[in-house]
Length: 317
Image (cartoon, rainbow, N blue to C red; front, side, top):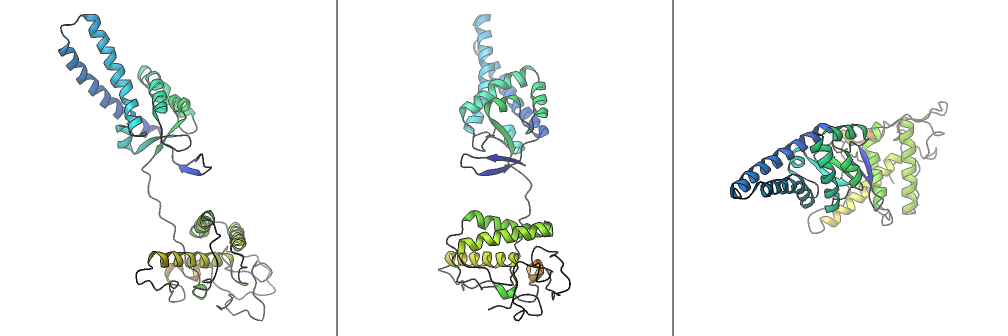
């Protein structure tokens, strides 16, 4: 992935096109341009057979410049970086900030492409692409552009496990109006990837996200609730509210999604670690970032000893 930063300071993850796909796209574009050049040149020569040799030579040069240089520039400008070859290979030319290219970008790429692609048979372009960290040829460097892949393999969307059943609907009175979209996105990304993280790193991330969420809502998190479970419960409450707004004219009951059974399929409490009875003698740090194991001294959210159930979780209010 290549991280591009837009003018609004938004980081974009784009995948630069590799040399084989770019070479194939260039070959397709050249094949189309050469075929058009040959056809048009034959027609022009046949129509201007009565002209002298100098006029025919001038027309041939004009046809070359118009079709092999001006044609690709016009196509990339009008299609915002998608020539026929790039369209077939799933590529696109974009600016360094990820935006669509304009005429000046296509012009610089086309003029320098005459030298590094046509006159040197692509040798200069291949060397420049191999040397560049993002596979850019000289035309891309001077134009401030980058060829990226538009068709990428679809990654499986991470599944956000629901919170434990006893947390469902517990935060229905929480004020979520001050929570920014960026924090919601960070919470969702953490919940979808938390099982892939190192336990200690994941636990620290959950604590930080929970602290940011508490600071935005103005309501402290309940004691004894693991930070990952707290994040999942609040995220579920937000989704329930959005569903109520979206289906306000339908038959949506407005409640939080019900979870049946102890595990509720693949996303039940097991996603946040199996509950265990903590012991006072074993001061072991949590082995899971979702409150799976650990004693009272290591857990950041503790329930009082008198109210602690045998499962290790605080009972629902």
